Length: 319
Image 1 (cartoon, rainbow, N blue to C red):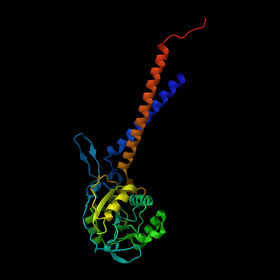
Image 2 (cartoon, rainbow, N blue to C red; image 1 turned 90 degrees about the vertical axis):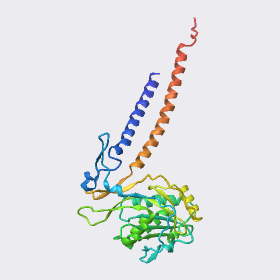
Image 3 (cartoon, rainbow, N blue to C red; image 1 turned 30 degrees about the vertical axis):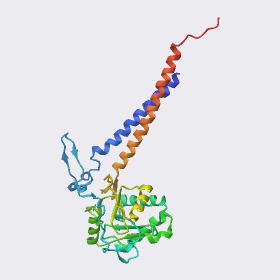
Image 4 (cartoon, rainbow, N blue to C red; image 1 turned 120 degrees about the vertical axis):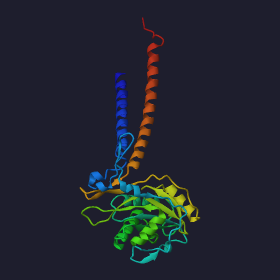
């Protein structure tokens, strides 16, 4: 009996401690305005510090105020714009439209974190659906960095085509580069707001941007936006199916994941995924809460049974 009480006390203590730890982790991003302090990393000009009514300091970098995704549903892509494909050929966007829908993405190939996660998320989702690139839809990826090369685009195509595991679909994957003027035009139509960063001591371009992919109809109209770096295969399949019939979807929640952080001590970006981490933490709390509820009810019932045994009818004693 004593052993049972000790075990129940131990799991209760552990559960409460775990819940507290998760709560602290969830609160931590909000203590820093959900993003890391850019000024603390040697770029004070990009830090926006504003005092709130409660005396808190909002250290959200000012650079993010110009970054985001505006969902321009039913907007027409400028299909006459030309970009260089992964073979070095200059082609108009219209080459990839007319018959099937397309998955459209704006990234940059030297992005070491978020863009790679977006493309991995896309590839993982595509593995789970029956539609095939080149037959049922096209994939069009354009770099927002005009200094990136055809070789970089070709390398990315090889990487994700291999990850996808269907080399016969190579004709449906299009990784492109372009001029600054054409990049600006396509980004404006898509609603992709990004900022080029000047990192002291380097000539490599860095970009503050959010993550999203778009589903585009065969006519070249924006039909659906999917935010983040992981995409539901079911939603992807539905989006492509509806877009193939030139149906325009509805706006989705603008829960954005940003890539903007440069750390001069390691010469790398940091991936800001506080929203994703918080969502995972909330799910963990819900599961843990359900477990604790079941265990508390079990303990309560056990206590009732024990009490009934102690105060019930007296037992017969021989003699």
